[in-house]
Amino acid sequence: MGESSSSASYIHMVQHLIEKCLIFHMTKEECVEALSKHANIKPVITSTVWNELEKENKEFFEAYAKAKSKDERMSEEETSQMIQKMISNSSKGASND
Image (cartoon, rainbow, N blue to C red; front, side, top):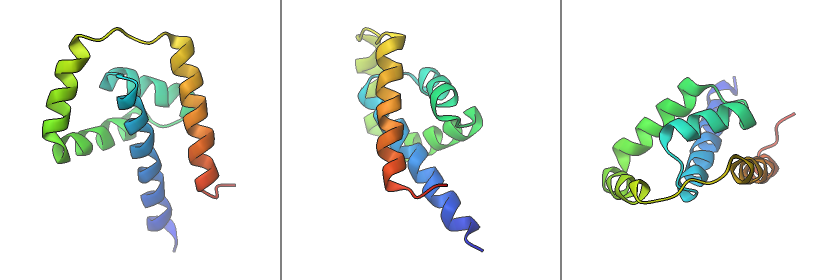
């Protein structure tokens, strides 16, 4: 019965992780790959949630894309550490088994 609420909190967690990716100037592709690798989130889910965020925040994403084209990328090591931190933070909030 609690299926819809747990999927809602799962989506919320994915959104939260995507927001962190945005803070670190990752592209959609980098974000999808990173969450798949480090957080076990299916690429299709990250991609869908990203698209929804993009629809709701058009101006932000346009500005983000402009800034992104001028930006240098983070190293894989930094990205990995940052995502591990994100996940441990977000799992504290959620009571998963």
